[in-house]
Length: 305
Image (tube, rainbow, N blue to C red; front, side, top):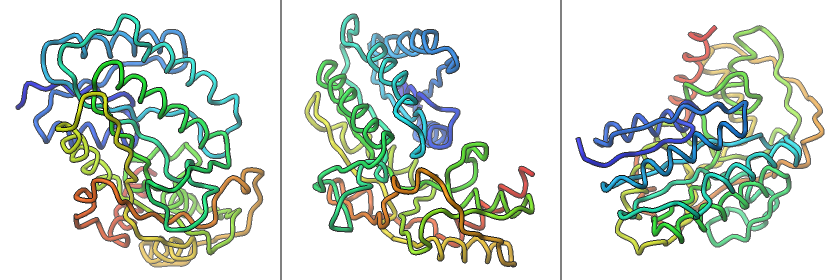
């Protein structure tokens, strides 16, 4: 056990929970703040208190921010409260730290690069969000850059590909693998509202968590206040057709997949493949094979129902 404290904001969520487990395995003392998310003022106050408490301790610290608002289909108004919260929680006034630490902010590769051209995209690709969600990720990234500059923290912005695996929030209408599995378990059809050759990069949740922890280790030796932006991805593209086939194979029977319609369809990029050129040592790993990750996800969805 190290003497380092790791504050995980959003530690009850899909990514945050996995990262908290990975940090504990690494020996960190993990703190997951209790946040009344349904009350924006109380949530901001609780988070500000949690952040300042960690930074004011005279010991090594880390912060992982994996909490987020909305999805690709959300409108602009869904993100206004998040902007206001970050303004309050990360405002430099009153924040004092004698020991610069490391910060990870979970951004979205799909949201940021949805309208970009020249696949596969890397960290040098010009961001081109199509939806308010993607624009909100860029705004939040800037909040954390300013926070890092003020506190001297080493910031790692992780632009993350599509996460999948056991433990996702099945009530949230996102995550193709888990949603296909859930629909099949509940004996209802799945609606697909983008072309079947739409291509995405699917990153298994435990692989993502390990990359976050290793990324924090990697930036710890960097200069105070520096920001590193990295795409976290499997660097393997798969079409919706291939995903449906993998989920069908895990069940051992065909899925009922139908063409659907959704007003958010124009916000989804057609081909979102990635190749990272930053901190490439994090990519030198054996990822959970996609078929095995899908099998585990299907088993978890079955168990939940």
